Length: 231
Image 1: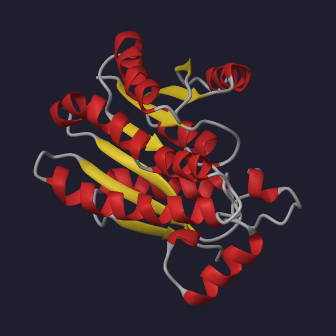
Image 2: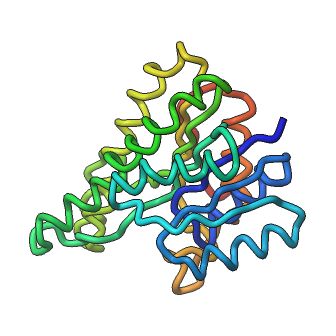
């Protein structure tokens, strides 16, 4: 039985590595993001490695589009077995000067759109005992020194979104456990090579290492929260 994964927020780095890791395990992957050209290149690269993939250009910042794309994936590829949520936004870096709508959009991508996607996929996830796997970053944790660094670096919107997403995962996990649906979070504490945060070439963590943690979480269906650090 072929399994299908939605990779929400596809781009270079973690999402590509996750698509490859699950694809090599026999999953067909639905690549979802706004950039159609990037999605097309991703499909071609994955197919070159023997992985079935399709592109679904979607603005995940719009909950209605996030919900609708699940139906499109189901129609084109069959029931959804897993969601890898890797979408994020760095908007509203200085929350004091940013338009509040920008902050709301950043939070919405991390929470409302994620919820819309999960709700739309729930019938398949429940039937097939699927999984929701969420990427997150350490900036979402509450720590006085970290918060000071976040404010200085103008990463306030992302940090707020990460904190809200962390809480959402923590609530969804027990809520869906009784239905046989696993919900897990992989929180990354270092800069991943090849991502937007690696502009200075200071990445220390391989995306494949993060993808391996995604697979471990999926395969073992153990704890809800997982961390990845260099070394």
